[in-house]
Length: 295
Image 1 (cartoon, rainbow, N blue to C red):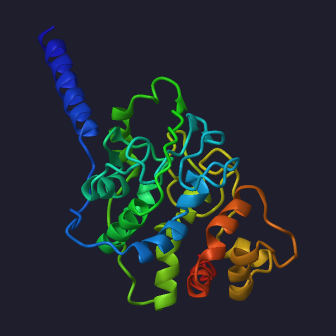
Image 2 (cartoon, one colour):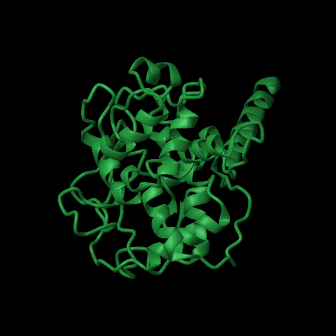
């Protein structure tokens, strides 16, 4: 009996310890929030980061970045509606400080608490301090649109934001991008975009039962149960099977036409219209260089 009480005590203590650990915030290196942002550079980051595609309602394209009220991201956990991120002080992020903004992008924490990973902070965390300041400056310079954000349609227990702390311990690693000196500048830039602000990895990777990207299967395609719905593999072998080379892959990011002269539509069509077609030629080529490098 004494041993049983001891064993129960150990289990309780360990359980409490694990629970406390899993609910503690997961935070990366401190951001330098003294940097002055450049709104012009930030305006490009808005397009590079796909902000317009997600945070603009497809049925109200004039209200740029005012949130998607009619079309959310459908997942097995519920539907997430991208919020208003204009400079509106009532409905957007006009009252957010740079510190709060940096925390959202870097650590997945906003004024409302833990953010759901439908917002790809696990990719934005790779951005540099200067880029975060530039993006903040650009968003604060947007016209304020006082349109309330649509609440997420997420049921219990997933509507309990504090549980996201445990998810982060399992699947989130806040860090900054580090270039690989053994590869070219173009390759490194491409990898940075794919895993960082462009967050290609977010939509083009399969998810496990808890919504984390399956280990070892990044960019191998998504059958349709993750953010953005069904997305094809971006692995080199699969891209070359469809006759992509660097020029044609960079080209499809410009106009949506594949080597077989099919036209990409649906979610990817919006990404091309609002995002990749407005990247520089150098960035589109860099992504192609990285993706076709044998992974």
